[in-house]
Image 1 (cartoon, rainbow, N blue to C red):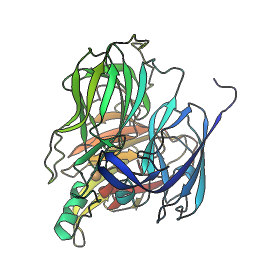
Image 2 (tube, protein in one colour):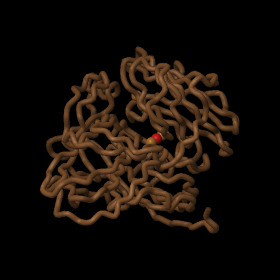
Image 3 (cartoon, rainbow, N blue to C red):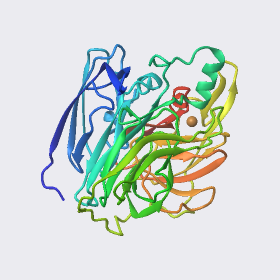
Length: 424
Ligand code: C2O
Ligand code: CU
């Protein structure tokens, strides 16, 4: 328990700048503080973050603090605040109640602003965190660039319809703003790697050359126990914290994304994100308990459903396809009452995947197609597979105001695959 709150202050300025993604390869990025990604914002659980924001972009913007359980007026959506115009300022101020890996990104004209680099990591630390030899953010993005490093426009008719349908996947893959970086780790050491998928639409199936790694956290912080795997899906918007290592001296391997077929026109491909080189050994201070924390279940798997939500894709005269929530685009749901447990049945009637993102609250997955999940976790973004129904539970605590949920494939979100609701 903390006795006094600490205020952590940052200044963020959105603007355009030249950013080298590789030697002799520079893009005209849009981002925060002339760097891509924006600075890593850090705080301790319970701190108050104050972000003095200034917009020097040629168009209005907003900042959304993805995953932070903050007060509604600070959520950075067009529902709760006026967009910050060119030359204007806004002060965001909120408490960070949970430890974990979060991120901030533009919530205006996202298919343009986020593609150009309007994002960064927000890390909230806690005394109860496992001890590792290093802690790194691994922010994944892909850019769709022309041969001369310009951001490519979707073009006319068919390419545009296809991009709207599939979401934009680019061939230039970045980790922390760099193409194909080399990451060095000392033999014998164990590091915490915090992956954030900031890409518009790319599904990343994280793979470390077949080596086992341990998942320790996701959107809403630590899991109950580390889980050893060799691959794991990270959809746009999701975070995943892993333990990497210990490795042996001289080893070299790639951080890759295995193909994921999300049923689009795009061909699923295996892609390399970075190379890892294992350097000379160093002693390790890492201490990873078997039990990381307890996650108390919010509701039993058979809890009565309080609301049904449907994601679908339907034909449209105007756009070829409409991306729908509850039969419409930008729909308004019934209000949700503070303190009343929400059990939502979220179904995906379409034949493609959609990462469902709920603003401002964490949920637990109770069932997926009638099956209990393999482990408990706090989530704010969860992949809806084609023709799948997911039952989630979440508790509206006392933070009344306007909230939303949407597909985190940015082109689907832009097409209206979102809904608004009020907590009252
Ligand atoms: Cu990370 Cu409304 O989004
Ligand atoms: Cu979608």
